[in-house]
Image (cartoon, rainbow, N blue to C red; front, side, top):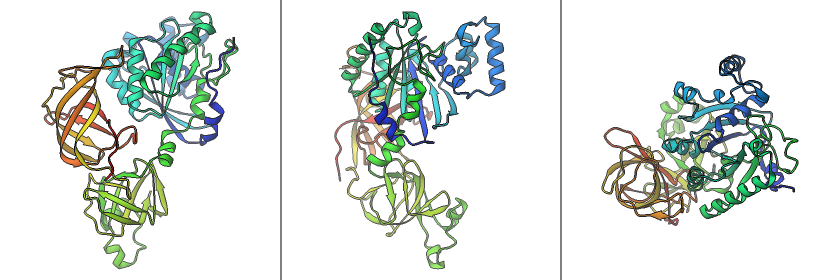
Length: 455
């Protein structure tokens, strides 16, 4: 039997850019081996410092580890909290940074327990890919469905499923295929168009950094090969999405100099009149001469100057930070949004959304909150809870309140009109946070649903 699960690798490899930054998160149910997989990935890519390696070797010996893993408890490379080490579980998101000859990586190892699902949401929000682990013996579990639902709602560009512990099923290709079929069925129900599936043994390193001779029926890439080949989300957003630049601050001559921008070469009159809107480009690109629209107000103007990293440039793109000067003296301040002309969504004060409830405090209709959208923070009210997602049936069921880790479908009303747009159209400007106005605690992460409405 031949198992071919990744026919699109060559096409994806052609679009990858050597040396780019790639962010990915791991997720999965308890004891699926996430931390062990991450440890193996770091160890085999030689991303472990000598003193850290010596410490892990010493602790592993004390715990009696041995076998083909070289006597290492690989999970110790990521489980840094004392409680994690003592319980043998992952509690908080552990970020790790490493690089290969092909590109640099930021890795977020997320917890598997149900009560820590909110941490998985945090880790996956900015990820270019999520590596979801599934135990080959157990297959698809409720937490697998929960994580796939989060991945679907967050529109993570690439979904990789590592079917782990294949050594415990004697490298049975038929079992791996059966689990793959179950995963494909769940993914289709959630609207996930494609899964990259890699059978692995994290403890021994099969198909992690290199392809394994023990799986001749698998003709796809090793996990690290796949991560090196997939295009980063920033690359896709800069090319396929329209310009969205949330304004963080407005720079005048003195502020521009303090920010390191070279404006002294301007004519004295232009120097005195220098004014630019600075922020991180959320999506798309911008060039001198482009026509743009501005919220609030909807006025249009032309880009006359762009500064990036202290120098004037002809163009910039996501995710660069840029200072943009316009031909017209528009009223810009923190919280404003610069968009490509004619693409600014219709501002509105009511929005329907999916929210990932993160806090122990319940979400109830009528609750007064703060809503942070881009660089703008406004007062808001939770006007209606239409239901929460049942992760067994994947349907929205009635709910009177939202508890921690619930995924709810709600309606919100804001004190100001904002140009909301669907998260499906733009991952950056289609997302927001809900904040407790009294304590400042983050209550929920939300994504805008519904159809786009253009001004």
